[in-house]
Length: 183
Image (cartoon, rainbow, N blue to C red):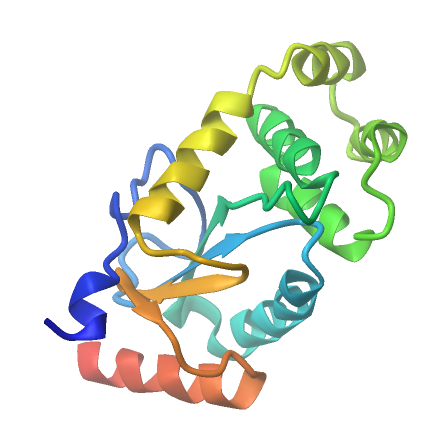
């Protein structure tokens, strides 16, 4: 069995559950398992933004949480904050703020970001203190484990793990190749 056959995304992208950017009927989906405190994910964040700008409506991007708490003590709470924001229709806004402020992910800063996004402050604090979205983060993490994720960032293109370089040029060319095949 080849490496690609063993590295399939489990479960597949789900329209009602996953955080997705891009039009629904796009043939190429790039999914990332990421950790908000991971410096490599921080590098990947700006690369993905540039890839999205270049490919526009030819690409769908999906993000799933994979906090590596042994190395990143704020990653779990940051992921929960993103999910709290998502419950108020601001997932991507919080996602961006967290990556743009990776060095400030303690609870005080998470509350500040919620204020900046004009989230319901009481609801956000309550959800965070009661870990309302910890289960959701755990589901993402376990799906990553089942999918063969062993570090972050970890990418999947159309359900298969992408193990090549994720530098801007290589990633764009790979995605363009997938888009061309599906056109």
